[in-house]
Structure formats: C-alpha cells, structure tokens
Length: 467
Image 1 (spheres, rainbow, N blue to C red):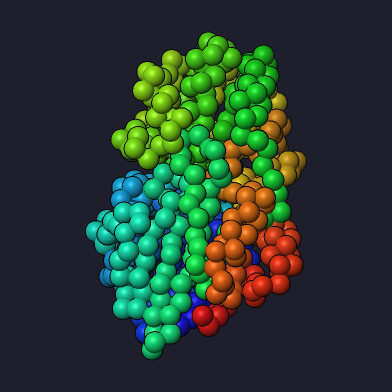
Image 2 (cartoon, one colour):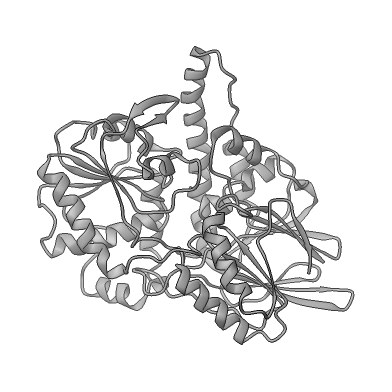
C-alpha cells in the first residue's frame, strides 16, 4: 500500500492524495489548482493518474481547492462514487455548478482579449454536463459512521471545524494482513470560531497527513475582528468610498455576515451604509447554512434562539442579477460589497475590482489566504499595478488585511493538535506536512522533527511513499 501526492504538495491549492491498496485506487480530495493562469490550466486539465482507474473519491469538504476538479474526472472517464458528509454533498451541487458557469464566462471574456491580441485561446476545463454527471455519483456518509470506500479501505469522517460539513478523514487500510491507520486533517479549523463546532482529535494512528497553511504564523485573536472591521468601514464611509471584500462563498461570507449583523445591532456601523452580498453562489450557500442550525456551535444557536438572524439584518441585500451587480458601480456611494472569489481569480469580484481599484477612496479588505501567483496575492503584496482580465490597472485603493478571519488553524493550534496525535498514537511512524508553501510548512516541520519520534516529510507533487 502506498500514497502519491498529486496536489497541495509543496503548495496550498489543488489538494489530491492517491491511495493504492489491494490494487485499488482511492483518491482523497480532488481540488482545483489556483495560481498563474497557464500553470493552473495545465495542472487542472491533465491529472497524473488515469481517472478511469479510480475506484472512489473521498472528499473532506466543498471548497473548490478540494472538490473543484471532480467534474473533470467525470469528463475523463471516472464512474465511481464520491463519498462526503451529507452537508458537503449538498454544498457541492451549487459550488460545482457555479464553477462550471464562472469558468465559461471568464474564459469567454479573456478569449475576447486574446483574440484582439492574437494570443492563444483557452478552453473550459469542464461544463455543466460533466458537473451534473459527477453530482449523480456523490454518496453521503455521516460523521462517525465507518464505511468501505474500496476493498481494504475503511473510512470514517470526523468534525474538522473548517467550513459547514467539513471533515477530517480516518482511513483504515488492510493489505495482505498488513494494517495501517492513516489520519488526514483536511483543512483543520480553528477553535472558538463563530458558527462552527471545534475540530475533533484524531488518534491511534500509524501515519498523519496534516495541513500547514499557517504552519509558521499565528492569527490575531478572533475577539479583535469586530473592532478592526469597524475601523475599516468607518474610514471608507468618511471618504464616501466602498469596502470591497473578496470572500469565499462558503463559510467566509457567512462569518462576515454573522459579525456584521452583530455590529449593526450594536449601532457600530453607519446606518446608511448598505451591505451587498454579490455572489449567486454565496447566496445559495447561505440558504444552505440557514437550514443546518444543528451544525452550528452553541453560541450561534443561542443567538438565533434570541431572535437575531445573522443572515437577515437591516441594510443587508442579496444581489441576484448581473444588472443589479453593475448598478453597484456608482462612484461616491459608500457601501460594503462581499463578492466571490476569495482569491480574486474569478467571479463578480473581478468586475468590482476593475471598476474600483483605481479610486483611493475605496478599500479592498482581504480576509482570507491568498495563494502564490493569484491576483489576490499580488494585491495583498500591494503591487503598484495588477492585471485584471489581462489589462494592467494601477492599484490606488487602500488594501487592508485582517488576519482574524482565517478558517485554518494557526501555528500553535497545529502544534498542539500534532502533540495530541503523537501522545495518543504509540505506533506513529510518519507525518506528512501538506497544504502549505515552504515558508509556512518547513518551519512547522522543523518543530515536528525536533520531537524525534517519527519520520517527517514535506512531499512534493508526484512523490510516492510506501505506508
């Protein structure tokens, strides 16, 4: 039995880990790589394994960097089941349909520019037909329910606390009398975040695959998020500017609404500064959120029972049509616009940036991780100009980064989590550090290696390891 790392290895996005047991292949995660357009195009289009050879896919959660390449597998011949928690299955339907739609629209827009410049054209990775096909292959499994994904591969989902429906994955492998228990954190959430329950703890493992997005960085306390957000909003309001918030449609948008609802109720936001959620996908995800109160943490359930709805408060508007979205591009009208995508690589946020990035009255508020080579990373680094839809534009808007919102565990939480795994796993032989760039993963791995009780690896894309 072995594992091959096909994505989120030496990088953050495109999570894909292929297990081979008893000549059966089970893919854990099937995420889109996000980065330079040509590099992303090639990596996402051409997987290094044969889709038709896969027995099953096991999915930790619905974010596209973990699920977004699934329709491509269907297009390439994968016909097996995709296992996920019931809420992840529900969320993947709008997430993947929106991904197909956004790809089509964005490539049409970019190809217009490429034709004008006599540059090569792009083709969509997949369309709605492949998306509908893969959605038929989903099979839901609840938390804590052990099931067989393939002969010799038993799977159990545990709470990850990262997004609604997210799970850690426990794999129990057996081949020719040899048994191994492998724990995969997926994206490990933070403790005491709004809305979600805290992560559970994996234990009694032979090997651990652990994410390291923030393996060398601590987050600001969640308690500071409100005061920082108020400062950003009040500053933009006084200049008659807009606050543009690129946010993942799933989880980050709902966390922002939760916080904004509280600030509005306490009178800390300007009463005449509306909040717009300009993302059809975020609206659909919020509707799903509203149906799953049982998965909220105790604090959020108590808030709702008291009569406060974080997804419906005065001044909040959900933008459905393109015409409504375009109407927001009126200069000198203070407002808050929350739009996907979180890394500013696609979706309506690109159009808002194009119309507002040159105005110094406006603020671009970054509340999530920005992967290397994305537009979001270049804006976060405050480059003097950036390319939007292939055209260079000066960055004159204020850029503010809030580190309180991350849904990923920070360094101290990751270390504490790993220490507990080691304490409760006397057979632990290997730890694989994935889902992180070198400046985050390597210092984290150095700390793990100093414990001198297991082999620690930072696998590269395409690397195979025997288990």
